[in-house]
Length: 348
Image 1 (cartoon, rainbow, N blue to C red):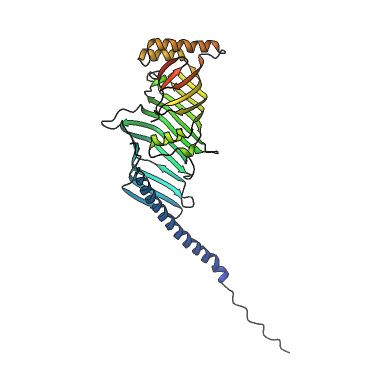
Image 2 (cartoon, rainbow, N blue to C red; image 1 turned 90 degrees about the vertical axis):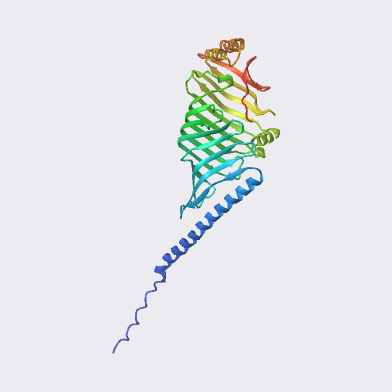
């Protein structure tokens, strides 16, 4: 008896082997198409923003533009960039390099390798050079958008024919804006070891020594900060009841330090700061004496303010050379105790 022949072996199906490669090719082709679409969308949105700003009197322009970074990034290369607003404030950059991930095209990192020049409406341009000058920008739908600017080893030089800028150099600079709940915003400004000429309370106190600034505040009515130009935006914000809640304001000039940890500030119709700060002032008598000698305030006002500071210091607990004082910004002036010591800071 013979056994039947066994059935022939089935041929191995290779579709299962090829399926992952086919899927990978499909996904790669889809991603390639998506990247080119994202690049085109970025170009279209830039053009739309330029036209929309131009219709409102603003300027957004560039001489050349290139976007590459395929397949995972958007690398934007711009030359001859200029951004300006109707009142005359403007920023120009010989070259701007920006980068965003293709899967997150609304979060940009920016670098200005050749520095920037900002133009003041009445005082002219200031060229800024730095060892490092970079920024990040995202959350465009929030008020304010998320913005960070950082600079290291900066120099500031007035353009030919322009008025000198009050800062000539700085070791570091930081600016951070964040949106918060209940239509609030947060702002932080840091200036490290700057060579500067100040006006008002801290003028001429440094005597050639670097100054430092730290400002940290929460501001209300962030969504109301809109207008046809900078003064218009400030006035609209002010009319809506916007104000700054100061969390820290520290100004160091030479051996003198003004350190405020509380206070509410706003802007008057003339563009000057108004409000009250409660602060600690180190080396107060010496600072005010220098101001009087420099002619920033009259010797009599310096003597009266110094006496007020010394009285405040004597009435406080023993804290070395620190006097606790109240700074009032009112009627366009900065007032220390009963004495006007200079103009209030001007916002526009």
